[in-house]
Image (tube, rainbow, N blue to C red; front, side, top):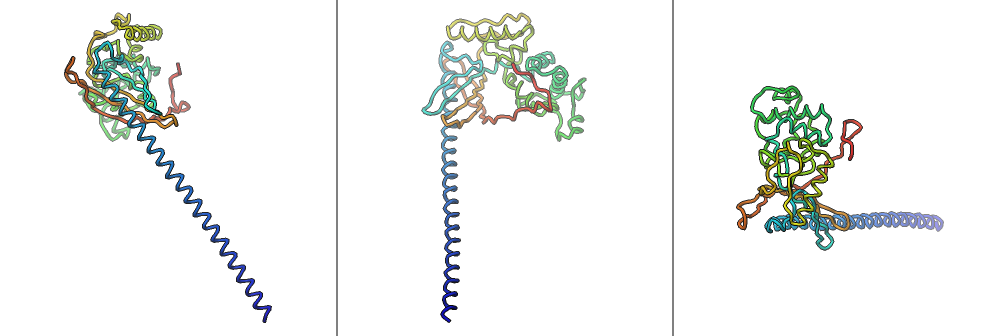
Length: 316
């Protein structure tokens, strides 16, 4: 009898020990979960704070660019897309200011200009010819298809679900709808294009390098030399001249800008960052000029092209 009670007691103690061990395991798991949750919440809060700081720093960059445009002409930045930089506490803000008159107007470009732009961007001749014809077919009002172009029936047959615009491009981003316009090609040529630029001629003082390279008679050496010269002339307060390209169509270097694009990159010391593109428009002139924001776009980095399955331009 005594032996049975002893065995029963040991059995109950064993069960109690197992229960305690399971409780300890459960409490440990709860503690680990709470710790992980706490770290996650802390990390999310930190990322939110960093992102907010980077965004507000980018806003400061926009205001910096607008303030610069209000200065006398000789004190302004050269609005050719070159970057200016400032430090706000632990945030580095880089700002570029680009006069849209330094770009091609996609709604006024000829076939020759389109081909020259694609060539300057390193696009092969066959692709350049195909895309140029398709851009012109998208833009013109008729339904006559160019040799390498595409009209409504071609887009529908290819399953795009939309037809050509038969009108002017409303934005440069609309180029993405062109049949055969791969994203990596768009990323190469789009910085040189605008729907707000002058219909005829480019201002060489603020023209992008790719735009100048697409001009008749341009060479990399000539273009790079001119860009360096115009920047040094601007810093010295000298009047810049047009590059020595006699057959290129330029507007006078003192042509005032109306539309501007501001690109801002704000980067924290820890590595977090934010990029934004803002378009400005000038109202009035001289001392009465003011600059208003037309659009704001948060920039998301595009994926790199897969050069194993498609042709990509060589670096350099």
